Image (cartoon, rainbow, N blue to C red):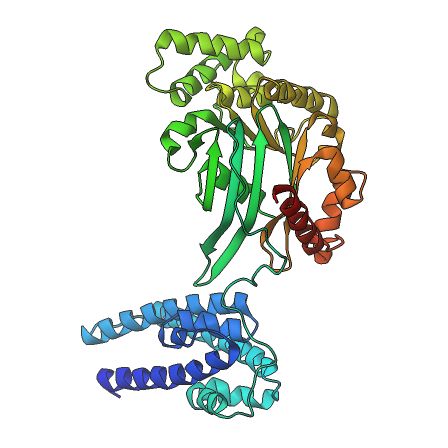
Length: 439
């Protein structure tokens, strides 16, 4: 068969299978237009078959297979031998494609409640079989696939709350991303006001959206939101506001062979506005050294510091700009109880300087007495990060009917994560509670 005839056959086969998928997608609840889009259609076949992860791999294999075909036709056209290695790789790709298509067709057969006897026909002549299934009213899937992550089912507040002049106001409508041709909602309906002088615990299980929330609040990854710090809009005045927001990640980025003083001096150069003079920067470095108890070790190398000293230096680097909003991700990671307690007492002192301090920690109960408020984020039944509580710590215990932060966390975690699976219940309960408060 000539190259041109082979290409024509492939195009016809593609169009026939696309027409069949067009009808199948319509029955499964997937946008039918995806049936005509190369590689996207392979992924959505996985969605229809309730095997989304395998659909991702199948789509990638389709890309690799097309590249191999193009290389082959180019070599044939140029009358160049492809070589044994190329054919071995191409054969491996073909086998992988075959296996994954078979897995997806098995999933589709199961979704449509049919016999596995259909599998050979689907593998050999997918186009005509899919077309028949799509046209026949007898072939109906057991359930609809979803275009995006399952929509959040828990009720929403659905309205912004008024900004406060002396603190942080967060009104996040949603934060979404496109994940492999599919819209995914990471956060939804999060509203709160945090006054200055408050130290706040950010609590939530894995995947509840804690990091996404912090990135949205700081403007690092903008959401569909309105975030203000005092009278300044964090998103519209980001260049200005970046000096008024400090973020300390879990892992420090310090060079071990620099001294403490040099590390802070470099941080001051980066974190303070260019309008600040050298003398003012030097003065600020000395103030921070004293504030964090690092003056005695200012000439020591970073690599020689204890765990507690290193953590204090990491925090001091971000605090050098004297931010109003100070956020820390697990600052007590790797520290023993006594050292961690001392560190949190330092953070409490910072909050008492009319700052806002937000902290993530996996051991909140040992220092919970130092916090004013707690933010509880939970994954609802649609796996979307939602606000289950924001307010005073003592009222949180009452709201959840629990006596510790660990128990609160277990109550909102999904059952497959070892929790009670009550996230929707508390998200809805909090929406009613805050509606009464703002109403």
